[in-house]
Length: 206
Image (tube, rainbow, N blue to C red; front, side):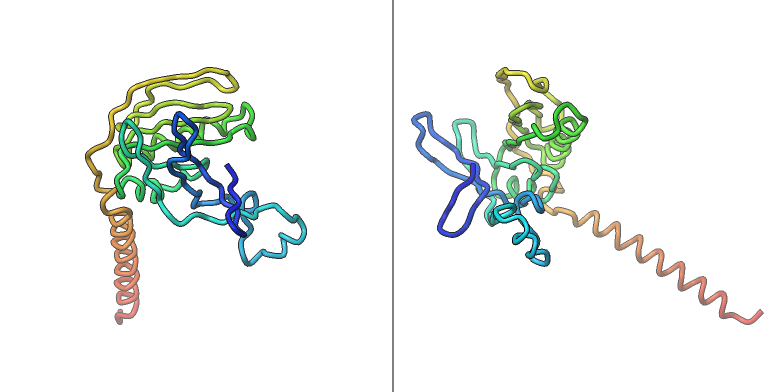
């Protein structure tokens, strides 16, 4: 939903009660460039296409509470950002919900690729996902990355399933990309060491 608050426009997901009362909301943190915001160094684009890309990013990984536990919400392509999902889980989310509008991609491979990103996020953090897409693919992914149930594209239907709520925290959830940075450091160190040895060998008299 789009929410006008003072002078700012947020891309917002609401949690509603069965009576329609607003219980909580989450403002999208990672906006899509040019579609939802214009980078500051290209601010002149706003003058060419006024009203396009006027959203303001959220700044809080909101944890919502429901009858089945605590969960976070990732909107659309936010599921391609590993650290964003990690922050939700690190702050107490036991499962994740992702909502998306994939109608743009019709029956291309894009909806399938977008859906596959959710599997990676589930495995990285050992949390299940419930995914709702307006034109499909909707579905449930368990904490081990197994796909429990899905819908077809452009099919009007409803699905229900049971997933295992994530309780154990993974090394990635706790430490993030430290392992990747460490590996990169070792590789760079090895490269510099190799170059240094080669330079010394070339400098020796024959």
